[in-house]
Length: 408
Image: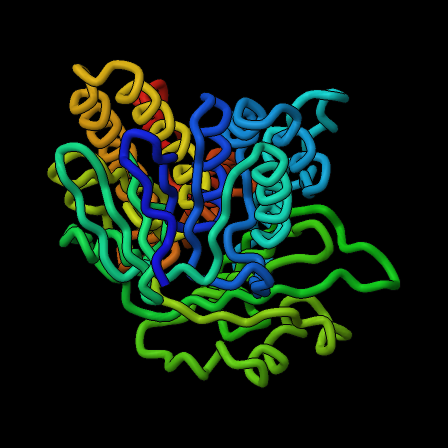
């Protein structure tokens, strides 16, 4: 079946991928008055399991507010803002800090909610903004020229646009079709993520807990993060541990009580096991500057510091800005796309290095582990040691490149 192939000059901007970054991209285009058409390989009634990315920084909420008035505030109110952070080492608390409730009406410093909920907010905003969606549209080929980009889907449909923004994730069909490569490394060892529904009998405390060498689960490192309606447990496996040692439903039922207590067997919502990738695309645009890569189509980081979706939302805004500039001033079109590619590549490399520094704390070598043990022993009398144990697993804080979006 032939799809809606139209003259390039009259075509909307194409977006491939209807995850949070693709939806944010479409909103950013509409906020600038540009028509946006989203192609998504999944069906319209898809069910997205698991929390996946669950943390939005205030910077991201502010960008979403600019894309669709009130959107960031709505998401912020729906999600959870925990008031307490605690860090423990082998069962002993080494750091704790609580924060006052934020000002009424202001965007929170962050919010925590499942990705499926974030996508629900974004999809509703896209529909209200007039974004056009084509579901069951699996991209099979992308061709670019100096004037346009053409997309063909597996069922034979085709679309032509002036520009395409690829937000189709880690296995990006757009990136593969354009022969753009991901460069970087893959961590050894497995990481387990478990979503648990909040019990009916009482709400869990709204506190985030990081636990080095948890005695209740074979001395593994554990992170507990609340989200709207439940909490997520992240478990860092050791090198050589097979995935089934901790990452099956039966295995989770075995070790979860040692982390959160009894009574959660029937409240496990999702279990996922994966290895961390720390990779960045060698190019963020095609040779004709008609395709721009954003989100996990352009970079993959370990999740510490919540850099993935947050940097993807910043990518989305920057890509929409570049396309708007290119269409408004064709003489500067190539320069506008190159500026996007250079800036977001710098941001991605910063985030990759920061995530790598965080990963070194979660998978410590002999020297780092010795520092952790010493810091835990000194924390009761030297608060800076406890603070280091608290902050190190998230990598460096924002540096001098923040104005260029280096972290996000």
